[in-house]
Image 1 (cartoon, rainbow over the protein chains, first blue to last red):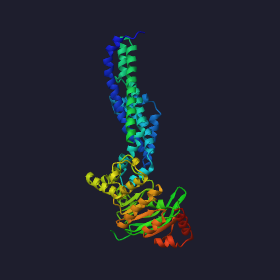
Image 2 (image 1 turned 90 degrees about the vertical axis):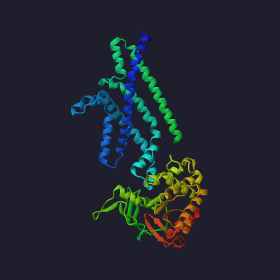
Image 3 (image 1 turned 90 degrees about the horizontal axis):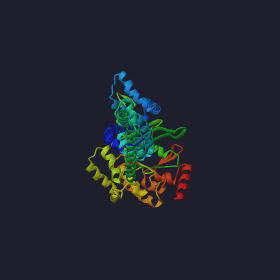
Image 4 (image 1 turned 120 degrees about the vertical axis):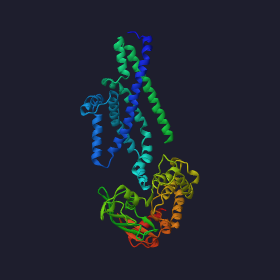
Length: 218
Length: 259
């Protein structure tokens, strides 16, 4: 088994191009996870018991089933209900929903870390529910949970190869195709690993930087 | 100013779990009155303020601010549960300063004072800023407008909290043991602020305090709470110098000894 550098060099551009799809899936998936996750965390604290209970059930359900099954479900089962998603849309949605469930638990911890007295001070000033949330509670709840959310960003990034199972031509899928064409798997798969490693490290560094920035301002 | 009392409580009951905290409070406070509330800890003084501020809902009985319950409203001749709008309209007539300040730690002093005037009263930012700076100056903190709460002493934090509550121009202002968390040398300055406010006679004050001399000199009326009921209610000299009940006398003496 010899690592052919010149072959690796030749296929690198195609892999970098595929990396774009991977990044796109990660960014879109995380956008869904962050917004839906917050919505789930808030719904779980709702005064309306039925909503809180249904949300808790949904979160537990999503966390207790494999991501790959969820991806297959959105891609193969939803069309039977008339909802036809492109492979990338189905994959991004599955990633987003799956990680939203995890993020909602992080948000919940962040919201609970804000003292009740802060809600009461806001009520005494007659601030509305949403203003209290946006101006008083979230600015205190979010900084401590940035590292935990950042970890999920990296974890989601590393889960994107699962999308190859529904024919999204992301990084791993591209490497597989290259391998099938040339019967050489060492170079493409090694490059895939290196690209994931480099970007995961970069993302982790970015999260640490954000964390430090936020701590200065807190 | 309307004719009736600004605060009216009828048969007010509140329990925390199995623990009864208020056991039937009837109280009328006329507009502009300065009322001090004294009594042992756990007697329900703070709970009374929390009910007036609508931070708590009564288990039974009625709270009225200028004749309106925050929790119910009239619709088609019937009392129905209040919607958010009604609650906030009534709540807006009341303001509160807390024992532990409860400032928003991520905002500057100025930000704390401006937040509600801008986002509740709808003041333009510039106008709110001018007004907030004025309120900060009136509590002696003109030079601390851009400091965060973490950079302020306890006394300064409480001054910001007072400025923040004043900026909403409530009809009724509630002070919940606002000097209890302060170092002794900072207490006098805060009490002086409350005294100045009382002398202006621009709003009704309800003051929960352990400072008997302050209560006597500043208030029109003193309420003595014990075990969830008002056991004495009258002019400060009468309650503090010649209490009708033995337990009031014992409480006043005990508090005076520690000062």
